[in-house]
Amino acid sequence: MAVLVTGGAGYIGSHTVIQLLNSNEDVIIVDDLSNSSIKVIDRIEELSGKRPKFYEINILEENKFKKIFEENEIESIIHFAGFKAVGESVNKPLAYYTNNLVSTLIILNTMKEYNVKNFVFSSSATVYGDPKSCPILEDFPLSTTNPYGTTKLMIENILRDICKTDKKLNVGILRYFNPVGAHKSGRIGEEPNGIPNNLMPYITKVAIGKLEKLSIFGDDYATHDGTGVRDYIHVEDLAAGHLKTLTKLRNNSGLVTYNLGTGKGYSVLDMVKAFSKACGKEIPYSIVGRRAGDIAMCYADSNKAKKELGWEAKYDLDRMCEDSWRWQSNNPNGYED
Ligand code: NAD
Ligand code: WQD
Image 1 (cartoon, rainbow, N blue to C red):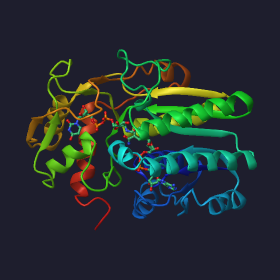
Image 2: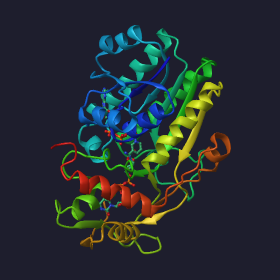
Image 3: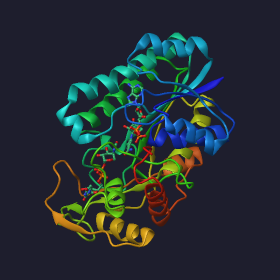
Image 4: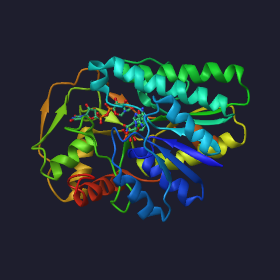
């Protein structure tokens, strides 16, 4: 019986696959490599000593996707696959709705056909919109400000609806805060296409000399130093949260929803300082205007996951920066030679 990991060659998926393999799970990856590299599969093998079965398939190609279920006994699905760039989603909403929503519907229909009962979904803190206060609890009001976020909220709503009628279905909705860091080996990590939108990959590209300086989007927020505050979480902690959730679902949990964050908020300037310490270099920056759609502050209350899953984040900010730097400095061109 296997765990099917969609998007398992991607950033969070690859770290989770290694932990699953290390826990003796039988893992199958489906990924179309639209935002990842085939080399990730080799590195997963290198780091875990096991090579997961890999299907290079776009989930939207329904017949090919269904064949995976004909050829294997799938017991659970962890669904990472999707497009994830907020700005791009504003310019290409149809591509985002198609890829994120339709692929999820295909998976859910296939699960029904093949009687697969456990499903873990990658949601995001973006579903809290501009939260009324921090720390954010799972029962806070939900809203979104961009098509990417809307796909996450729509999928959450679909999952809540189907779980109301199918009492045997076990669904884990995991709302990630800001994933950063990399595997301690420095062999796998985050490699965005083009100029990064997110803070950590932007800083690492400045540190490696590929970008000149960081633009800090606003220093007039109501935060301790005026720059935006977020809950950065190590990707290894996130990955561990998926294994704990799988255990929970296997005990017939029904639908469960958890914030995966550290509960600590750090500002952009705090990040610059911590990263400078990790890489031993100054990170040049300038303050520019606010980025449209940004909020001042966002950090999690993750006590529900602690209580119900026995999960809590272990890695601190220094470790997140050290691991991100090791990945970037050992692989200045990502997975390219
Ligand atoms: P990623 O882009 O590195 O991984 C996603 C993987 O899915 C990629 O390898 C891509 O090739 C694959 N993929 C995309 N569409 C596909 C399709 N139709 N068929 C098959 N494969 C497909 O992203 P990530 O950072 O690892 O994020 C994983 C999930 O977590 C995503 O759903 C994302 O929205 C969600 N999430 C990410 C963040 C973040 O900041 N990284 C935060 C919150 C939630
Ligand atoms: C963090 C802070 C920026 C870049 C996004 C998505 C969210 C989730 C995680 C998927 C903010 C500031 C950034 C830069 C900067 N993804 N910043 N200069 O916006 O919190 O969340 O990624 O689900 O949905 O919205 O993350 O890393 O882009 O920004 O000053 O060049 O860094 O203003 O305060 P964000 P981020």
